[in-house]
Length: 183
Ligand SMILES: [Zn+2]
Ligand SMILES: [Zn+2]
Ligand SMILES: [Zn+2]
Ligand SMILES: [Zn+2]
Ligand SMILES: [Zn+2]
Ligand SMILES: [Zn+2]
Image 1 (spheres, rainbow, N blue to C red):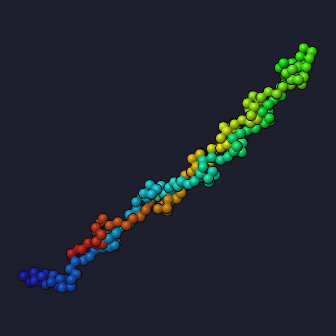
Image 2: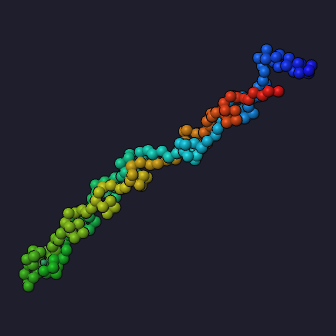
């Protein structure tokens, strides 16, 4: 009977001091109610690097550069006729002798040579550049003609770590920071 009374008295004392329970800080979050969680970086999918597309520095984004061979003109000077468009060939009538049946060859006026349109350039003196097919443009080797290059750069979101730390509610204490414990 006496023991019981003492016990009741003890409870009353605790109640008066308004600390009836002992507060045990959460062992997981140390009392903050928050935990730092490391999760894979969404921006780079955990790789720490992202690809960044930029305009090609070599061709300025146009995807081509002026053809080296023709200087961008698209035409090459004919090497067979040296740009003249005609070639001097042996006169077919007199076989280059300049004489025909004892007289001056009427075809070549006795010179034994006639001018023939250059076969290689069709008489134009030049022909489409063999390197660029007459376009004057070479596909940019740096960007492959796309005009843009993709570079791998350090992910700015995670500074290349591949993971980010986020603050989350402590799963242990549900954000309370600790648990009350009656002793
Ligand atoms: Zn906690
Ligand atoms: Zn990242
Ligand atoms: Zn060319
Ligand atoms: Zn002739
Ligand atoms: Zn020619
Ligand atoms: Zn380019």
